[in-house]
Image 1: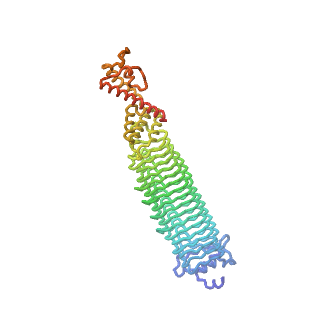
Image 2: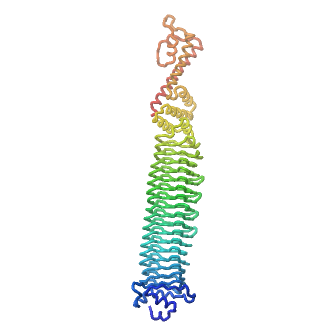
Image 3: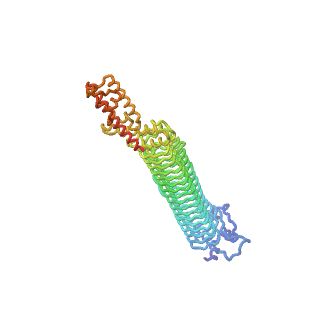
Length: 621
């Protein structure tokens, strides 16, 4: 560097800066005419490279600094591969060319409220902060591989694109209020503090707008009250604090608006209202500590998946109270150690699945109560919910809970669902319901429960079992009878088992139907054995009166055995029983002979049905 030649060409303005440099005195050119505010970039570069290292120092404690305000910098500030031991402070300046700090080693850089075509600083090393706050960049900011001991401060910048792959900062990475119309990328960056985009506006419709994948953030990640038009992705990123997008708007119709797949967020994910996501919110296989909060958020992706959290682990609660979602909320195989709350949530996906919770594991209650509304199917296939599943005062279209396991299931809907409720092979401790609000179509085969609340008229329970879309299934009746028996209601249990037999025989052939009907009338399929005694007493009375009034003829005229009408009738009625009357007497008139045969048939029928009923009654447990 020919310092002498450069000093010979200094303008008055540049001389002012040259003389102020050793003491770090600010040079303010804002009050000068435009023609006197021009400073060559090579003059700034020469000072920062150490052109005056042997010049007299400034006052005690002063730091040699380029501190310039209101200048128009012509040419380029070219410091590629340079050692830059002095701070650079430019405020309200306009740079005609992009500064070049490629592979430079710098002390402190601040370009505040400046305007320039771009900023080239890939692989730069900055000992303190790199601050570009409030500046406007007409082109690209290149920071890939930069290592900054302090913070990277980009709050309020306006730019087209920013490439910051593999950036390492010891402090915060701040883009609060930043504006961009192209891709902003921090792929594989490492941030020693917070990563903040509060009130940022990034627009790249239909494309990736913020690439923050594979990052490591020692603090939190904040994007509150921002607007992001395009995909925002934080895949494989690890955040030790919280990720907060409360009040932000993210738009990527027909695509993924926010992707946090396989991201590790130790401080929780917060998407509080009035946050709005148009497109898919994807957090597949993420690990979220403390809490997942989407209270009062609006997710809009009609006819598609609005939220996909498949395989995500939440070490705390899921709070979705007041959530409004158009499209499927997918919680398949989610593992939550705490509660899952959907109070006052409104989920809409007509003719599709509104909430898919198949395989979900919740350590506490899953609360879909108090204003919860779902226009679409709810699925809980294979879900295990440790604290209970509640639909108290909720409104749903249909429920599929095949193989659901929970200690408490509350189905006290505000109105009967219009579609199917399928609880086949579910395992429930306490089932709280109102038979009046069950739908017209149910599937209950294999449903097991320990108790029912409230205790209602057993006839209402039986009417519910008759609605099963699969027709007659024995298990629901056996389950209801076993529950009644545990409560000490043996008579109700027998009524249930009789109803089971009626439905079983109703679908059989005419012989089985006739035989079943006969068993029902006579002995209640063995569960009402006193009916047989009644029929026997009636037959005995009829026979005794009839044969008492018209005694049968004696078969042996020489016999002196007296005729006893009651004993004779019993001898005719009871098969395999010999009382000596039937062998000694026999009616000859056709009407009384028919009565005798009718009593014999009645006896055999009663004996057979009683035997069959007793055998079934013995086997019923």
